[in-house]
Image (cartoon, rainbow, N blue to C red; front, side, top):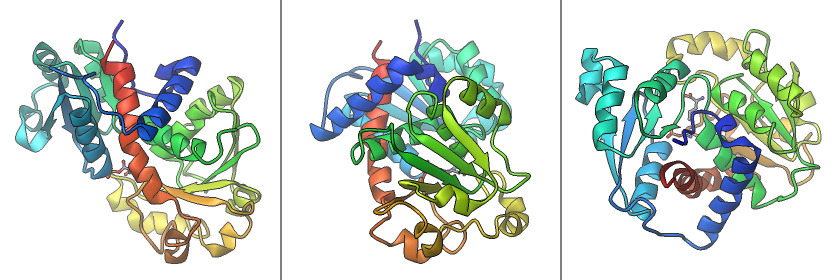
Length: 300
Ligand code: CP
Ligand code: NVA
């Protein structure tokens, strides 16, 4: 069976735990291996990337494989060759795809028409690799998630959606604070709640921050929403994670951000640069988590 990682749910309860523990082990042992020896992995990126691209390429290298980086500008994708044709061509030469794109349906199309595993490296709908990596960043500090409070303060975007999905498998309490009109995927939220996730939606950032052990945020305008920047700056007034908001959190609470960050918008310079900020540990953990995800998906 081909194992795709298009959303957190593809891992299932057991897979989610297994990948988390394996990523920690890979980090602790600075794992290098030949899991991908002789394999080629195509990386299709329709949006910009620093961390995701680098961590996948370095990870593929450390697992003995080869990566091939493709953008629409340098391939026939940019000249309207259908994705379903590209998927079939890629599958004739390669052993897997890592894809960053816009609509989630594009990932689904690659899965449908291709015959090699597909990993979602960010869509408008979700950022599952990042959230698994962020969960590793919490796990290495606070391995017992039962009594943990996680806050999401900001846009109900791809990151928020994947956090909500992760709450199905990991027993932390997740409070999502978003302004009206910027909700996450509400069908997903309802599904997560009915699947046992301890997740709730609030409008007040202070309510989410109170007693939180980890406070997460992200940019107010994601890639593809640049034209909405000014409107969003107005809508998200009061949602900046600053020292006043952090002061409401649990003692020793940590600040998390997937990066890149816009200081002075979703996070103050002071919080970003404070000892509470673990954003570069998050960035590092992308590498360890990508390796565990690739082992799960590509070495079957
Ligand atoms: N966090 C993240 O996905 O960063 P990049 O956009 O740089 O890959
Ligand atoms: N929500 C952001 C995440 C970037 C890593 C975006 O989609 O642009």
